[in-house]
Amino acid sequence: MIKINKNMINLRLSKQLATQYQLAKPFPYIVIDDFLPEMVLNNVVDEFDNNDKWWYDRVKWTEEFQVNKFYWPHDKESANNMSSDLPVISKLIDYLNSPTMLKYLEELTGIKNLIADELLMGGGLHKIKTGGKLAIHKDYTVHPTKKMYRRLNLLLYLNKDWDSSWEGNLELWDKDMTKCEISVEPLFNRVVIFTIGEDSLHGHPIPLNTPEDKSRNSIALYYFTEEKPEEIGEHTVIFYKTQ
Image (cartoon, rainbow, N blue to C red):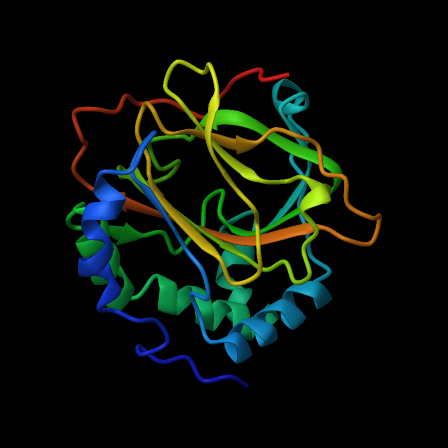
């Protein structure tokens, strides 16, 4: 079993990178490579690859926007069972949701009083299979079961030996939906952190061109505040056509 401790990431980077993050365009974001010790993430990848529990949304209105996307957990019970079903990943998620990490994220982003979501609503493990895509979208802004407002996404990629020809880049678009401003390959041990707002348009709209036995894997975590920011409305996910 791997040991997770508070010194796994360089906590001093939060203040050093704060200006870069908060002034980034088209909306506040940052990409950090080699985010975690490689040995830790190797154990996470092994457990992820051996996981046989996956859920798929069968919702008609999302079918043209969200293709071949599988995730876990999918409800409160499966979230509560993660510590026994996926102990390594569960320990990592606990760390990324810990007070130490919340302080790091607050210093980086300038967003105070962040709250982790222990239910991982919409987050957790994400697997996109060949042909899959996620259209450019705005994320939901209000937690489905609690009166909290979504403020921040953290995406940690688990893809070893990723080939750029497979597509699947995370795209950040301008607020008028005229063009992709930033394209980020989902490389192993790369983390992307970005602020949720009405202009935070993102996705990976180009269908994956991976071999049948290769998927685009990530861990997604979302952070909230009790206070509603003036700049966001209250809505569920909003998809946009890009092709």
